[in-house]
Amino acid sequence: MTDLDQLASATLMHDDNKALLARMLETALQQPLVPMEPAPAKEYMEQVAVRTAHDDNVEIRLFQMVQLKSSEHTYVMRIGLFTDNRAIGLDIMDAENGQFFIPESCPVCQLAAITVN
Image (cartoon, rainbow, N blue to C red; front, side, top):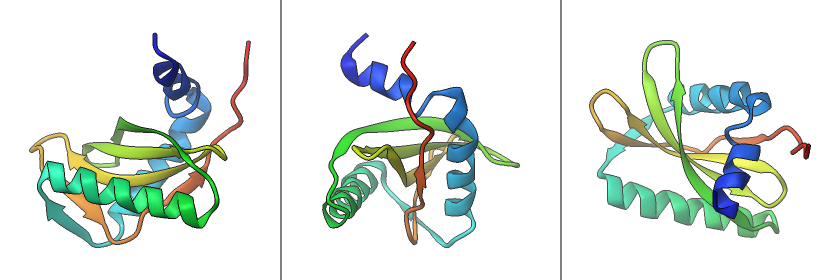
């Protein structure tokens, strides 16, 4: 397992953060979403994450696609992980039809602290 895989497992995929990421998805879905092709959505949203990180004087540790369920559908959301253990929700793909969307504004949440066994 690579270092980035371990980091994703310890943060974004950790049980303590699942509810936080689900709320982040719900926040994004409650605002206007703009349909976009996958490649431009990825490029645009990663630029938004980099700008947000720069504005907050942090760095991006990784980008990760995470499958999440809302009350009605299953989605895949690209998430950026900042060095201060916050996550930013970026573009969203409807897992049923493969359509990508970008939210009007990107939700950010503070993740639970990483625990080391």
